[in-house]
Image 1 (cartoon, helix red, strand yellow):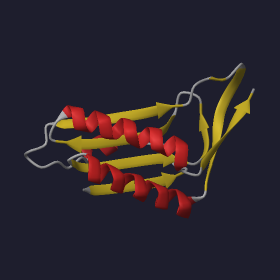
Image 2 (image 1 turned 180 degrees about the horizontal axis):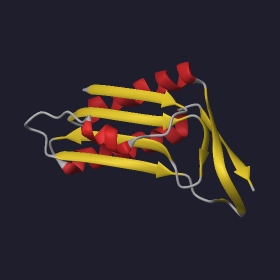
Image 3 (image 1 turned 120 degrees about the horizontal axis):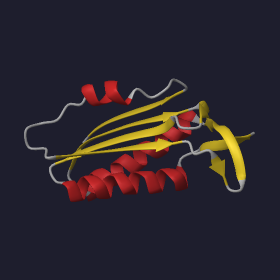
Length: 130
């Protein structure tokens, strides 16, 4: 399985990422997910979220999750971009793409990746209360 991981403060250019997609002829499913910062965190109105990451440990945890996915589903590739630093309301903080032969595997792997990321990857968020 081919993987690409980017942790960076730059805005996520989803259009450029889609144009850079590379799939083989046997792939029939591309699942993408975009996580967008909401304007509320609990009862508070916020202007954004400040994401902090321990990059080396985060990359290691992502590698472990990718390995688990590779053992569980027949996935061709995964690309993941996670913002760090301040991300304003309505901006993407996370973009994921999973390519597989069939949609069931692509959806399942994407869901697993996001669920495990939230549990295990050391990326912390601090809401910016307005």
